Length: 95
Image (cartoon, rainbow, N blue to C red; front, top):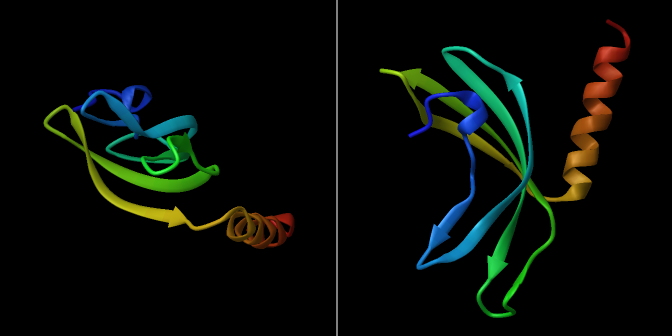
């Protein structure tokens, strides 16, 4: 378990093979509840290659000194990511 938000990663390894490769992350908020936006790729055992970039927003709660995953939202495609960006840009332009 990670003890600081900066240590949190979604890299996932199984049998020495990195199946989920974290490409980048942005910490959106820190504290007792931490929110992180990740960019990552999944490894395909069939093609032996990493797939397209994917995105996920994850929330973690700090309990007893360690961050515990609590929820996640996977952005299904670059097209969906762009729609989210456009909506948020429109909503925040007026602020």
